[in-house]
Length: 346
Ligand code: SF4
Image (cartoon, rainbow, N blue to C red; front, side, top):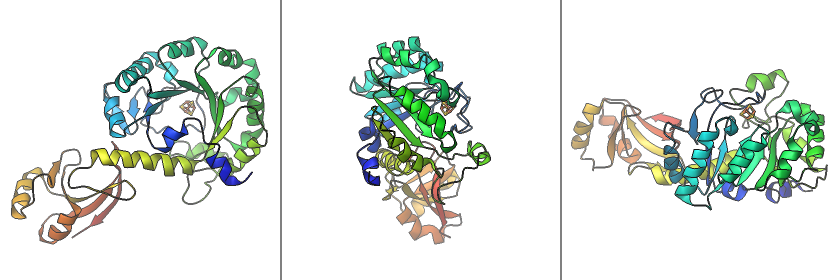
């Protein structure tokens, strides 16, 4: 099978919405009992009972709607940690999203827990789709668990999603062949990826990055093609790390940029925001605004980053006359406002 058809014709279920970057990623808790060695969760999330809507930390559950509005979400993926460990919050989030956006707002959820009672409860509360991520320890003996019985009783869409781990090829083949009998609607295979928190574990197992620009582990993609040759009855989909980064993230960022850009910020082709930054205190704002006759809305105090911000075009003109450090700054339009580049202007 030619390489491209695997990517384009066998995209994971729900990927139309993901492709548009229109899916909110809702981490409902960082708590999880699975302890996967490849867990990519960052330190601020792993093992902590916190909520993040995309990159935005959520203190009150209602704040989820703010982020969903900013990315014009058409659906939500509830993830963790393990959402089944915090049932009350998970159900509150389902109700909140369905009540606000309507029944058509598609919600899928990931879990490593094989608990039929909890799954039934989530079905009743409005969940549209569930994706199981059985812990590695049970891949080789999945037939001895309740997975098959559990799947049989589920009425909503149900799938399994696992990473492709080359040194666990035998375990993976066993798992895939076995669950192929269970009546799953789909199986998603993800390219194994390095993260800051799993780097040491993957390194110890001898994994290296595919190339200098990728966080994907070498050998994982090749394994996808081998799994395709198993010719399973269950639809099998593969999601590469580059697909996720390049398409899903970029489109989500573009959508968010359109909604958060201030009057003085320029949206770049990549969906990042370009602005002029003056490293001066709040008390200098009025003085600079008046001296250079800058219009309202084109210069502001940024409380979060404690600096004055203005249009990049204006700052390029006036930087040489200012006794403060001035920069052209490019940053992501995400809640964490990650800076991509800072170019000094004086
Ligand atoms: S199930 Fe997911 S969140 Fe839990 S340890 Fe494994 S990778 Fe991490």
